[in-house]
Image (cartoon, rainbow, N blue to C red; front, side, top):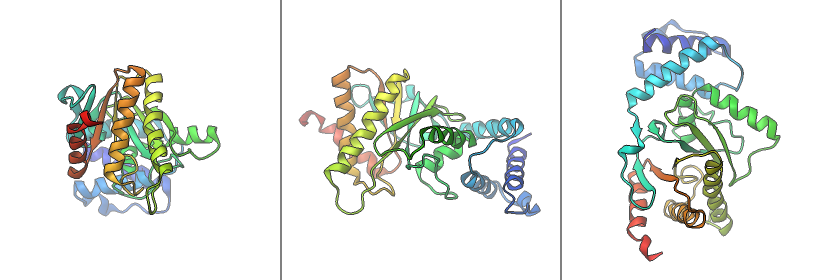
Length: 264
């Protein structure tokens, strides 16, 4: 099977499994971008449930090839801006390091909104449907929603990293409070501690809570950097930390922070 054949197979199986949408032969005449959007949408809305080994095998080889085609970035290609700290602008689902951090919601099942551009949606899409199933297993065992500021770890499945750490950041509606800041600090600290327990040698953080959760970008970056530097000094950790940014604005904020860290 080539990529196009695999994509159509996955689409057919997901439509058949869902039962709400009849398979339309016009799907086969869509261009590749339209088919990719349809497949991603179907994956986004799929509830966590068992699936056949054939489906997983085809999905896995399909997603792994998609990531290769997007271009994988190795940690060795990055240049440190400080002691074991890196700033990298790019797609976190293509970064080959030990672990990446997902900004999750309290249900911890990923984003169900089709084609939503949040990091939670992107990570779940390219990791594969196993990730939602694993998160559901963890949450069923826990028996309650994930508290803000804590973290969980899962395999990364089809991503080029080994693990995904999932943390729920604070939601800022209105003025930023001290509690918001403490919760965001806890997100970073919890991830660092959990990563260390799992022998993670390198971890990439997304900009937790700065998207739809409304945390001001500069204040969030200041907390992120200070938490990492405090963790390094308090524990002597040699774990490499990558601050992954998507927006140019966030990249400039982090770069400016490291230009002035000697004044902290």
